[in-house]
Amino acid sequence: MRRPPRPRRIAVMLKTILYLHIAGGTAALLSMVIPLVTAKGARTHRRSGWVFVGGMTVVSITALLLSGARFFFDPRPDAKAFSLFLFYIAILTGESVSSGVRALRAKDRATHATPWWDIGLASVLMLTSVGMAGYGFASGHMLFTWFSILGFVNAAQALRYWLRPPTHRMHWWFRHMTSMLGSCIAAVTAFLVVNAPLAGVSRGSLIVWITPGVVGGIGTRLWVAYYRRRFAGARVREGQGFASPVLGSSVAAR
Image (cartoon, rainbow, N blue to C red):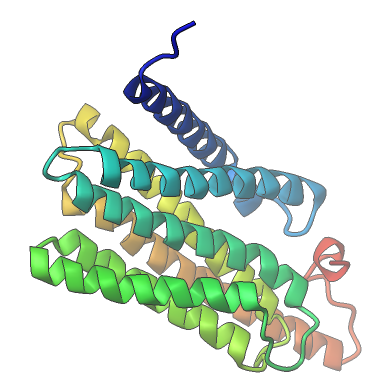
């Protein structure tokens, strides 16, 4: 029995990977809001959060595979540039999800940590960010330059978190929250870019790519400031001998 030609097998494989990529992104988008609005640390928060993490993990892995396929097999002139960008976004998204999950396992540490996975992934993100910045300047792709700055800042924050002793008793909370919100921004950005033509907007529009990051970044800073005030108030009440309802039993038990 004759085997199908190799190009056809590759096409089928890539289509399967693309479907997995879409499925992962859909799962992440549908589950994204639930952890944001439910009680932190409660069962609903944890379960929906794991659905989001699973979806974004699938998105990152399949994006790496698709970027490699586009780079080596797509003959179109802009394919290599797009594949490099997709590769970079996969690393950026993967680092955010990984850091957000693993911060929960480091909440009891009192000194610096040297987990090879976290430091290595953040280092890879930093190196690729520098490479993307250089490529963006050389090729005139401002989109590459913008995301290289975003990735470099994320990588620097991750390395600072893992390599320095904690300065706040709820350090793990803020690392988890900011990393997961960064992943949410990535998911929303991808959704808007894919569906931009339906609204008559080009997928290459900087507004589509940058707006979620700007709005999400401002929202994240406001949310972090809110919880810093909230935790500070809880600590004052505890010092005065009052029971603190601020954290909630679900978070305190984590």
